[in-house]
Image (cartoon, rainbow, N blue to C red; front, top):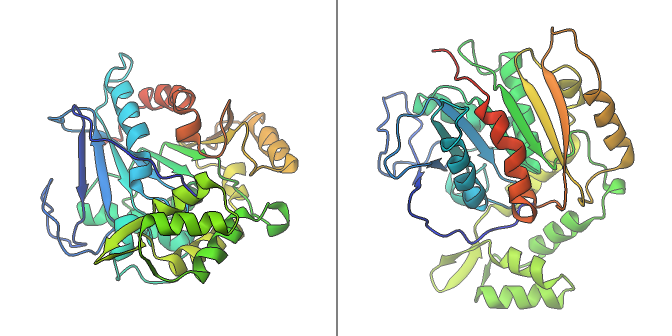
Length: 341
């Protein structure tokens, strides 16, 4: 899951929420809202009058989250990249609402199965519908990390056609790359989902829901986070996500394994796993396997793999230690050159 933030609209940043028609016709760069066919998203660049960008990073949230969770960190990253003397690039970040989440939950044409494969396909369809270049970087947190891995795997396999360009970097943030067994979990996510499924679909108020969750034994912070995932519907509040679809995505997240991709990254791609130091998501066997992979010496025929430990952070890396996360990611992005066109 992803902790919802309370972002403020800061001046000095270009942050446009757009929802577009999945159409082969040429898109308007900053068009008005159209029929919902592709994923909803926001764009972040480091200027109120953004320069033409030549590099793109997709940012993918976690279970029951949305693009807005990553606004604050993405603005900081955009500023750091803009001020970097070592990078000639103009970066744009695309903060995506994954299917069943945020504004994409309103899109009825994103049909099941709701799994990692189709969540990644949605990203490819967005790129094609908007006529964009393929992203140089994909950053994914928690469940979004596995969507990023699936996107890279599908790109490498040719699932999206011959015109695809592989991402040069994947940043997988506190997301276990293999199967996630219920036996190796504390069951918190499962308990939350089961509780939400038992609740009515609308509520008198956010305060009512928060108090109800606390009465059921959940912590105040978790209850308030769940309460932040509501939207107005007439005189009541309802979920800002499609709960049943999100549950199906969580099940797919648990079942999918991307160890083969980590063991054999495509040439030209670097996969970076970021493990939060205080996260409860990691078994010692998984940590040892990752570290073993990271110490292998390649012969240049494949891509790169690295593991990073984010100090003083739990699972919510962008909230617990955004400065440390920025210091990991920004220099690596600044070192890239744009895709050739």
